[in-house]
Image 1 (cartoon, protein in one colour):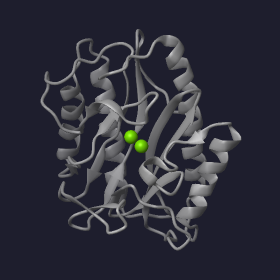
Image 2 (cartoon, protein in one colour):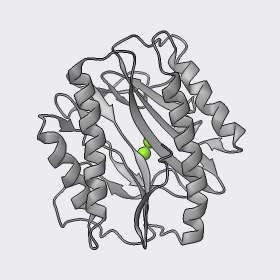
Image 3 (cartoon, helix red, strand yellow):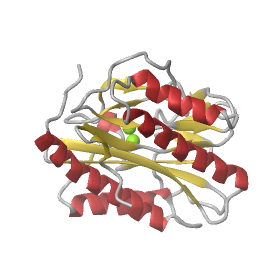
Amino acid sequence: MIYLKNPEQIKKMQIAGRITGEALLLAGEAVREGISTQSLDKIIRNHIEKCGAKPSFLGYGGFPASACISVNDEVIHGIPSPKRILHEGDIVKIDVGAYIGGFHGDSARTFAVGKISDEAQRLIDVTRESFFEAIKVLENPGARVGDIGSAVDGHVSKFGYSVVKKYVGHGVGRELHEDPSVPNYGTPGRGQRITEGMVFAIEPMVNEGVSAVRELSDGWTVLTADGKLSSHYEHTVAITENGPILLTKVD
Ligand code: MG
Ligand code: MG
């Protein structure tokens, strides 16, 4: 069931979204060679709690940290650790959620550690572009969920990349994950119609190689099946009478 949000609720979600976006940017500014993923997680938790919010991911399904931090061939759900040290040339995906006023925000981004390869930078750029291709679709009245996925997949496949199919975007609200599912692939004109009051996370997860993923024995970390790089870009998006608003975008 899709829970539509009224303008007052979307205002509340803007607060959760702003805190989420700020925490993500602060962590991104701290990304450098030699830092541990646990240190980045602490920066995120500190900011969220300083703002009077709660980290959405902490304890979610038993997840042990405030952010998911995934390096190189790790796609999503990486567990921050003091032993996981970033090295020059790595790409690091940070995924953050903040809960305040009864609502969640959810946002992710991929950061470069020092100088990275041109190939890695292109993957990051194309992933981000695919998100904004999906946003363009939402400018059209009558757009459907299948149009979002088709826009994402259509863009990344031009570069020979694959979208992850096993994990998808989702509605966001009082729960971190609500209906509808928002896959990064789809058929134009098919699926749920997008209407005012819907709030969902659009989150392209893009693999340099094959679409297939596998799960690490820690029960959380998802990796590319072929060991190639993966990139992630996500914002929580509200559909308003004035069009889509990116609730977690603060830069
Ligand atoms: Mg997320
Ligand atoms: Mg999400």
